[in-house]
Each structure stands twice: as structure tokens, then as C-alpha cells.
Image: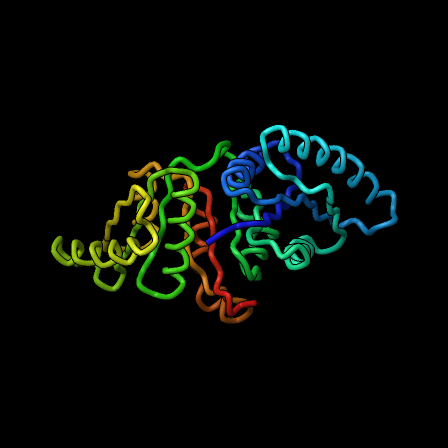
Length: 267
């Protein structure tokens, strides 16, 4: 697991500072190059576009210099993309071959975050405004499926990169009356899977019976995690309406920033 190129899609609102702080911490730790962009709806070559673009470029200049002063490699190439914001973000991510997309997750879920989550073909990190520093504790929601294993690999790599503890949570929704022995066996099973990626990580594995949402919120508060990592195969259209993605729920309700690992087949 390695991240070499990070695309930061920012709207330059005051609470985007949290997004930048987290990006700098990760980029500095893993030596990644950071690309900055802003997506706007105003058409190019119009006064409205200029009104938005000029201050954005000045802000990008400041962020670049701040990042470089902190030892972060920030690209000189800034992008102000005109058109549908989610489509612009995904297009630029493909053009830059970004290993990670980072966007701010403001209060509630907006259209842009919702669409990027649904259609992205690479990992996306939604940073909460309250998380003004790199993560201090990570939690990974994992079962035994292929996407959970990719999420485990990513969360273990991040925990090792940031040198922070990792909690791996398995939620048994089909056995809500599971007793202590059964939960202990499930926790041991997921712990053994996690150890394949976590040989240098402070690891804790636990299993709970109940709904994913309730168990996640309780465990996030118990562990003090400020970053949640989940896997997602991604669903769009009718399939998405029939069965909403669990990562969508987490983006709306989880009291932590969210990093979603996507299935490579979605490329």
C-alpha cells in the first residue's frame, strides 16, 4: 500500500483548514505529492468565473507555500474546473492518476460529497471540520468480505504511517443475540485477518452484535477514533435507491472523518 498522489478538492471555506491539516500530515508522512483544485459551476471566460477563480488562485498560492514550509510537496499546477463539481473532481482525479481524493465533509452531507462517494473509483477521504490535525486513532469497520480486507490493508497502512492505534470492529447484524463466546470467536477471527497487515501496529479487535450504525457510534466514542475506514463496492442508480450504501450512512452520521476504499473493478 502506498500513496504517491493526493488530490485535494477544496471550496476554501474556513472549515476547510481541517482538510488541509490532515492532508499535510499524510503527505509529509508518506512523501506524496499534493494537487489542489476547486470545482465551480460558473462557466469559463465569464466575469462570474473570474470572480471565483482569482481569489482561489491566491489562496492556492498561500497553501502551496505553507505546505512546502512544512515539508510537503505541493504541485505548482492548480486546477479551477468549471462545470458540475462532482464530475469535475472525478475527472481531475483520473487525469492526475490520484491515489487518494480528499474533500471536506461539512455539517450534513452535500450533493458534491454524496456524488463523489457514489461514483469515485479510488479511495476518498472525507475530513470533518472538527478534525484539525492528522488522525490520532483509527477504526476500521470490517467483516470477512473482499472489500473489508482492502479496508483493513488501508487502515493498517495509515495507522503505521501516523503511528496511531487501530481498532478493528466486526458487527454481527444477523446474530443480534450472539453471546460472549460467539463474539469473542468473531473478534479473534477478524484479528487474525488484520494481523496480516498490522505487524507494526497497536491493534485491538472487537466484535459486537446489533446494528452497524449503533455499534459503530458506540465504538468510535469508546476508542476515541477520529478516522473511520470502510470498504465500499459502490452502487449507483436504482441499486443505490433500493439498498443505500453503508458508507453513505457513515458519511451522514459517524462522529469521525471517513475514508472509503473502493473496489478496483469499479475502474
